[in-house]
Image 1 (cartoon, chains in turn blue, purple):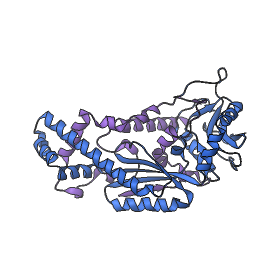
Image 2: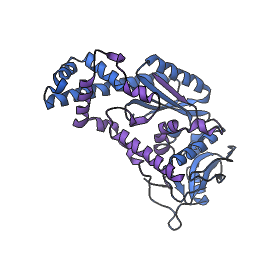
Image 3: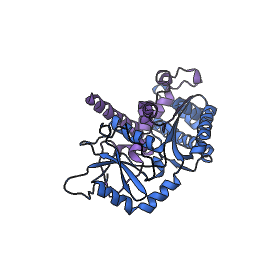
Image 4: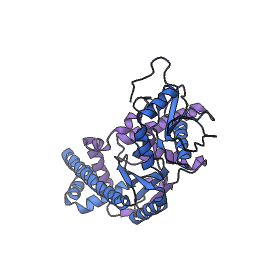
Length: 249
Length: 126
């Protein structure tokens, strides 16, 4: 991704986790750093801001262990105050470089920390059984049903099969889009912000919500009730409270 | 229906927040969102770019159409939901992201590849 290095000779030496206010308790003891070493996390302070860092591991790759370490640092920090979580894999040259970066955008980071005070992210992914969706399309679309009957048991032409598939794909897309809008619409009013992203695999929904701590219970309960209302053939996965990854970029 | 909720953000009880399944579901948040400081380096990590492929592009291909047509042909409309749902019987509510389903597109393939990378690396660590 970004490859321009401000520090030419020695290379980056610090792995960067998060920015907090310098008044944050920063309970870093006992945490494992990215790279696997314990007890090496510390904070670099610059004015009203602090940046949590550790020595950069020699070879940084997205190992499960390291992603978990990155995430656990965020979880510890967010338990005690507002946090701006970094994207995984950010490296800084040295302490001075960190301080300069904090100073350069001080007002912006301070404002974001204030905005995110006492909030957390909830990510909701949802899928609907593809067979159910296909059945629904075939039940409700005469064209799809006709093409399906014609192409069954090896019948029909290649063009028939492509036409059936295209029709069905378009219908699935529309139906999944409607489902996503429904779910987001029902939960948005309980959130302060939302980011709806492209769903992966068979999911029809991948949405993140910024929720006030005071409403987190209410939000989870609403999401659970919503999921139960959809019933069989649906799969909802709610994650949270999470550090506000989707609301700091 | 399956509803899975995972509570993170609990101080020091690491295992609740970062189990295999829950980490998988927030991978894109950790890898693809979060704050970027542009004067710093972001290491180019194998697999990260793949996450950005838009699933919609994948869907609009003849190959996918043929697979959808085949899936329709296979459906037994009469049996409805009583037909044994092979996938949910086996997988239950284990979340494996794009790994399930018949129409596995490039996204799910990519996600699968990334988790393979983790597995390999983690094995190597032992």
